[in-house]
Image 1 (tube, helix red, strand yellow):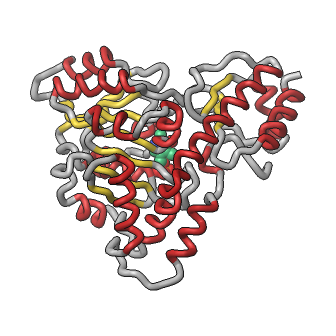
Image 2 (tube, rainbow, N blue to C red):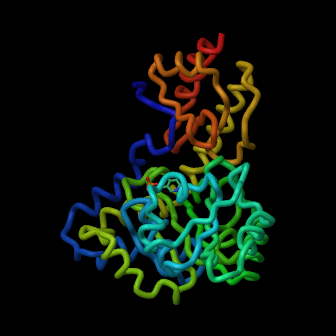
Image 3 (cartoon, rainbow, N blue to C red):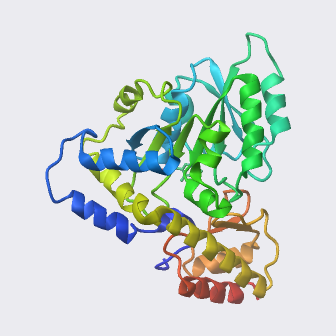
Length: 342
Ligand SMILES: *Cc1c(COP(=O)(O)O)cnc(C)c1O
């Protein structure tokens, strides 16, 4: 296998600032189960970042963050509206349904990864009888599984539907940082100001060790979420090792710098692909992912050369850049691709 890959941004290691914070957190003893200074500091940094008094929890990964956040927004007889390509629908092995004791995901066609308001409306109002699970949550992914980004107006539209139908809004922000970097807006503009009740703030892909933050902007909704985390096996005893890397990344804007770099490198990669004659991309490049269609022959040659390229996400071959992608990495894959498409 090649040393560096473009298969996903979770192939990357830990960024220096997260690594440093981790080693600092390892110097002394600390109170377990999140009662430590690092966890308190990370939560405060999130409150500063979002410019509001929110409740912050740390869990081990994105599947847990999404599943537990969603299950806290609804009862088992409810439904959760999401995009058909949504990670909660396609990549979490039924965990959202499992943790919500059987609440149903209602997925709607979303050609570019973004929920289409009319389709959402149709899914919600299709039935209003007692035999159909009642819609209670709107779940959106920012940036999306297709590498697109909801802009502020898109989110206002989502908010409006949510208000009209009294739905909670959950945001899967596994790549929230990439969306903020792409839009260049304050984080509050695309979260609580547009009605997001709970955000799963991703950090693993962006340079942390593991661990995602679940951020409740509706503090009332957060009540007893700590018990839910504990019951689900998501209360880390040495919590500081989940939270300290986030302190390292939230300080000095490392989180947004990392994501901005990943986005910029994806832009460069797209430019270089065009130069070797690859001009067709399935979705607009708005964050750190590119989707293209490679022939079986080309894909086979690339695999033989040691490149891992997923073709089951977004229905095409995906190339992703990360916080650590370099110009040399791009030169390397372009050189091999140029050969492979001959
Ligand atoms: C990676 C990812 C997650 C989190 O996945 P885990 O492997 O459970 O950490 C969640 N949502 C999206 C859109 C992702 O890409």
